[in-house]
Image (cartoon, rainbow, N blue to C red):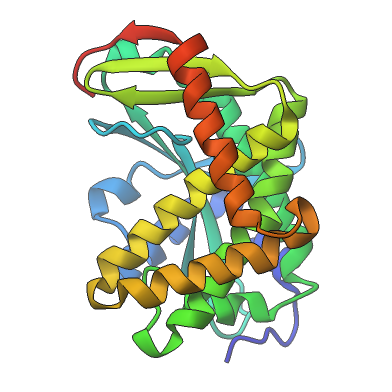
Length: 274
């Protein structure tokens, strides 16, 4: 079902994601009802270097302490555009959610957030042809649609994405000098630079995994103990090679240390409601 008989995923991606195909892609996305028709209209074709991609800019009244861009993966039947591809195609779209609050907006590095997601897109292009089973696993195990029966495999899959994909992108961010962390609370933003690379990585990893854990709690509120147990197991197992034994403890210590730096050394700015 998911195996392409003529083209690899990368070949298909470059044949599909072109400026001339944009309106046909939008039509297919509308047929799959992934987004509202109003949002689909916002999808643009962009290209950086030799990499074409789809992009959507949305203004949002929400504010979080994480990056504002995301690489959303959707599953489409694209046979009418690329007949040689059979089954479901995994298409990535970079979405930028920019806060409407002008005082908050100045703290968001849109270009860097987009570059972070472009890094992930390059990773996917290198990865999926080597492991085409990623498409099936992503459909089955992503946090938004996994079944309760697949809960443990889903956690393993999603935590694996953080350790395998976020860490290289975060290393790139840090090496390019993007090492600030921001914390929003009750109308203020506190900002501090984290100059230790491993501490920067650990802070962000615990932030990502905590947000992911909350999504599972929301989907399966009756299974919080099982979710927490499996998160601890997977973080310790998958983070062992990078951070050593008791990975979760080290992540939490770095997180608390960074929060202490925010409180003691951080610059605080009044920004009002998000």
